[in-house]
Image (cartoon, helix red, strand yellow):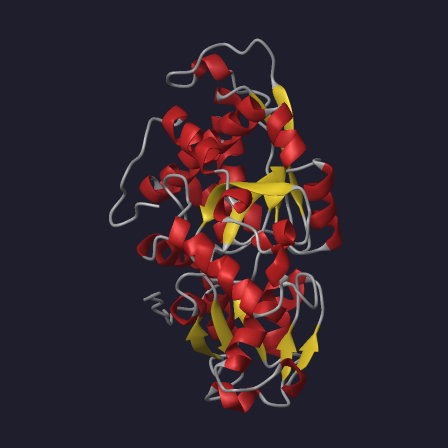
Length: 352
């Protein structure tokens, strides 16, 4: 069960969001433990699904700020997208211009992409609602968020799942599309009645408007749903596989550092997200307690298969074009990256 414990202490003003972290110009890869001098730094674009990123998306920022990418001779440029299902993100995946979040839905639609690493296998979000909404049935006629891609985007998909739990259809509610940055202020201001929020925003929402509350934890509602996996075009993977392995290895090390070294990573995450320290510390604790970030490949065959089956049942993937697990996930590439990062580990109860 996804556990969230809401604290009641007050916080100061919300920091300005949206800043990218500084590069690692002063970092010498040869200075990193176990690193060798680079013959050349290899450039790669790494997308994050939200602008500004949520705490769960900050692994690339940690890898960049701590010089982990540079240790692997990777010159990473981080690009923010307004939703993992946004047109720009989809284009970047299909054209091979950036590593981005890739789904089985895209593979089933014939896009020549493949997942190469599960950044966060389990969903971190809670479905948060206005004070007058007590059950999923109360969502009938209400304004639900469709940020991050509109119809077919993550919030739309999750809103549909919550409605289904009360035998309601998409047509029974009003979905409101907007920029991802509008999720929290939209709920607080009453422009929307329900939205999937990450832990740091749940914390802030309850500070700003105490009547807001969690209707359901998405990981409890859909425990086998594959949340976020980095992927790329298959042509790009075949052409620059070594670069992909090294880039993923760096982010695996970053995830492990997030689990192990709060003092080192919290300032980086604050800078990337623009969120105050209390909210970042709270979110990090929730994500760690519930093994949201991966510590190894981030892939689980049963989880991927369930997600494919669910998307076919919901009509997001045509049954005749249903992809296989092997078509969706390049587990061998992820395993090679784990080996390069020092081999498999278990941190607490987290093993994926």
